[in-house]
Length: 187
Image (tube, rainbow, N blue to C red; front, top):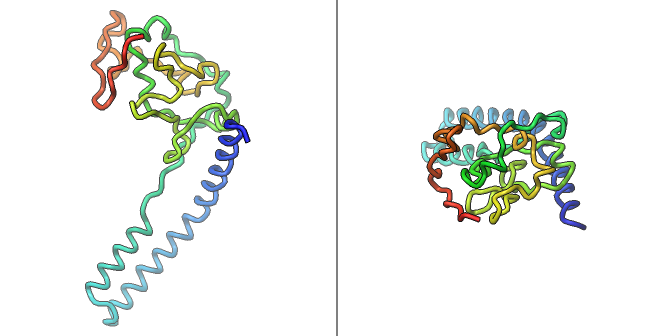
């Protein structure tokens, strides 16, 4: 099985799992409510002491622990989305592609194409590397390695008034690099 096909299959499996999880959320909430009632009854009858109740409260909290939320962006057709008016080719040598450190949610269309990498812990968020930048960013040129297939959020993003990118867009004065991001080496 090719890499693209594996991502396509994984995407389908995760979509189905997410749908099943949504259906079961109401059932889980009902079970937790019944659990609380049972604990109160048993405590009221003196069957459970305070230590038992604290232990059962911890067990209940673990049962309610948040699982990663699936973040899927809805777009009609990313290829029909209007591109940002920003001349990125001219500005990337200065801004060093800082927008590639942002969290980008993918769409079903992105999953169906199977060309983009995503975070396994945060389905379907575009994958970033340990340096905090998008996995598809060419580290030497600072240009997108999947430009023709980039997500709709990347296509439409307009950095002109984003203070994370520019102190002054017109004068091309970049903002300081955000804490936690490595200063990219010039090409």
